[in-house]
Image 1 (cartoon, rainbow, N blue to C red):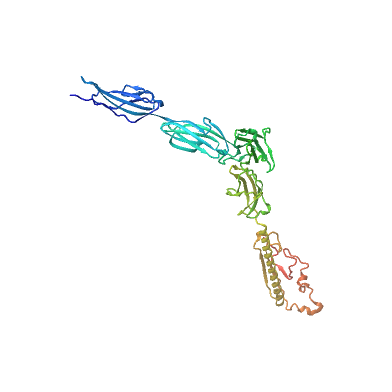
Image 2 (cartoon, helix red, strand yellow):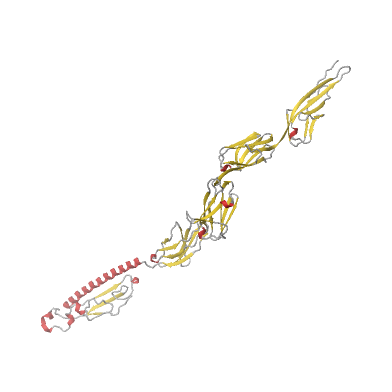
Length: 539
């Protein structure tokens, strides 16, 4: 009975991925036929190499090994007296050699192979980046750290700039990466120069304000954007005393030093004095367009100077307040505040504090209120800004016991009281005269006592009726006389009237030759009276 040959069945995938550099050992999978004995041959379509084995083997796969590989399986039967029967079957797979991304080219149109290109301002520029990568890459074109264009799963990227400006100049980079780059992309650089006149760098972050302390040094620095790059002699520093008067600075003076490297130039000023603060200029020219002139300012910084002329304004001192005055010192470029502390000189007194902001006054005046009368005070003053505090100044002063207005008021009160008392005395003395006359007529004995006491002895000095501040008690006693005649009867006798003239003397005449202590000359003197107690006490 005749049995036909059944050939083998090869079963290989369409693609087999392998990383470059790895060892290839790839078997040919098949289903045996009949007879089961099978021979296997691998053939490469790249260089027609053959492997008489079920396994195709390469010790280190390279990109050149990438291609189509065919596995052929064969079996055969040689029956007796019959021709040989052969069964054959093939299968092909792609050995896909993979590798990390590698930038093969990065150039500007018409400048292939050039890594440094100069273009004119307002012209166009097209960047082209090509990558060798398997699998495909992510490509990015960036300027410094700014991404300008990107693409995914590609081997090429283009980026065009229309109307170049000076700000477009710089270092451009193309980077490519796939999963085999391990976060380290392949890169190529290309530097673009654009011819342009000097100007500020992009972003506007140039510093034109500098600060310094007195007697320190300061360095003013400026970086320009320009191409071609100006030479050091084309950076010119000046010191300006006004808007129209500026003086060139150089390294010939020990006061200043100029250093220029590339697009940056600096001016160092040594042992800074007050005259060094102000406006400086730097002018830059590279032969293209107009020169650039920039103003740079040097300002002082540091703790404020100590206030000057700290004192009390004398005619402002009262019992309860006083006015302080001083001249502000230089604030060294920062807003300053004046701190005042004051307290009575007596032990354990608390400090009182106040702050006064300086807003440009040439002289400061501050009032201290709610002070204690007749008290000595200590006052401390210093200036303060963000950099620190000045030297402290101290003064002392004393408030008045009474203010001039208070003293004047007291004098007015005293005069009013004294006048009232004097009027009272006159009234009382007048009543006494009437009583005296009536007593003479009717032989009546009577006595009265006059006592006056000043209410406020503490505010008066001196003695006597003209000087408040004394207490006097005076007792007057009538001398009893018996006479049945009236005082007018003696007038009828003619020339035989009494020789005791005081009986007929008027009040004004009787005072001419008599003086009593603590009695005003203008006060009337009453005859026929005597002091019961001549002694007077002045309190």
